[in-house]
Amino acid sequence: MTHLVALAGGIGAARFLRGLARAVDPSSLTVVANTGDDLRLHGLHVSPDLDTITYTLGGGVHPDQGWGRADECLTVATELRERYGQPGWFTLGDRDIATHLVRSRILSEGGTLTQATRVIAAAWDLPFTLLPMTDGAVATRIRTVDGRVLHFQQWWVGEQAGPDVAEVWLEGAEAARPAPGVLEALHTADAVILCPSNPIVSIGTILAIPGIRDALRPVPVVGVSPIVGGAVVRGMADRLLPAAGSEVSAVAVARRYDDFLDGWVIDEKDATLAEEVEGLGLRVAVADTIMRSPEIAENVARVALDMVLR
Amino acid sequence: MTHLVALAGGIGAARFLRGLARAVDPSSLTVVANTGDDLRLHGLHVSPDLDTITYTLGGGVHPDQGWGRADECLTVATELRERYGQPGWFTLGDRDIATHLVRSRILSEGGTLTQATRVIAAAWDLPFTLLPMTDGAVATRIRTVDGRVLHFQQWWVGEQAGPDVAEVWLEGAEAARPAPGVLEALHTADAVILCPSNPIVSIGTILAIPGIRDALRPVPVVGVSPIVGGAVVRGMADRLLPAAGSEVSAVAVARRYDDFLDGWVIDEKDATLAEEVEGLGLRVAVADTIMRSPEIAENVARVALDMVLR
Figure (cartoon, helix red, strand yellow):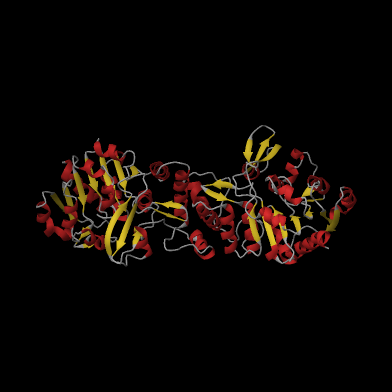
């Protein structure tokens, strides 16, 4: 059996994973998700990327948004804001709150995020093993050009990515350890797949957990570019790459991984960049990478795996 | 200004307090509420009596139930039960959950129940000071005749008061202290009013907090009987009084308080018991005590206070 590990952020990763789970036997797949975006809201532990993956694969995601629950209600959020004057910059839906209550109760009883994630994933019948990148307390921080330090979500959701970014880092990374099972999965993996996720605040934060980047070097690693035609498909990587000294291009993202990357899938729109990617010493494949359907995502997954598992 | 303290349980107390707040200047009133029924559900700190009082006085209570919120939704509870298989024996409505989130967040940040209660009461513009009886960890326990020990709510809500009761006690009472402000309010009170609340699991638990019963002895104390015609108006005192060695009667309840009680309001249906109450050395008043409206409750409050503040 082929053992695979996928490193994943939120929406783009979730849509890709829907295809990957069709392309391979998902029971041999371990998905390691970014938790740098996690935040406490109203005393609840919210894990946006874990939940986006869970809801998408479990069939409960809001189809247009790509995050949050379908058929969602906002009774609790409205009451918190209007009755109790609580901050409303990050709205939690009622169905979503049930997930956060389950997770937060497990944590408050001394359980780990790994354990909470297992319970939640089981409730959604996830076909693969979903792990947080770490059980440790980490937080993606943004320093704006005017010198303020914000939680990533405050910048992205609260300030709608308005302020220009001077620096991004994962607070708590040095002291954090990979969650139980992460290094074990990497050590036994036949291949690792980087989902088309933000290279700074999704894949970058996972790589910031000590031990993970080193564990990737001996394994065949293939990735799907989150940058298409010099622009982001989703999210805000175009706002963050320059702050990290990279251009906004499929090649520049690959270069950030060049100490461990073996193959790189770029979009058809970027076909002319193939040679430049090969110049980095990488295998390259070209595909339609806009995940409009699980079938398209499945094709991307097959193209990616073909480069390293042939 | 006349300083008053009311000791209160849930629904009966809340409806009486609606009248008391009309009969007196509520800004000089301190209400001390039972917290023995408090419980943790889904990681949330739920305070049924504090919330029933708050919602009733704040105009947000479910009018027929007498507890919980009007126009309530059950999206979170349904999700917790059906998606996550969480216990559903005690249903929390969505609007209600907002209150528990505010309280639980304050507690998780190191705040006290007194502080959380102040924040919640302010959001509802309560006209009086509402205090929990204690900030300590206490729980009303029921030992059933078949030897099981249950949280009060498990017996009352979970098992619908089915099993016969051998014993009731407030776990943690010995180590608990009155919440800040409780003894101060009692020491400066011109009179104390016992709301028509359960003598075992509402008033009884408040009296079990060390220092409160002693503080009542020097103060004029008047109460409203929760027993009418030998039966409970609401709740389950008829199931608990026998286990505590008392009959189910307005006289028997007064007798439980005879070390500090000065006046006792009984219902018109119990007018024939007036002499027996006087035989306990108490002043007695007869009134319509079924709180069908704030006006009726106001009359009961005036009748009660007239006995001790004339």
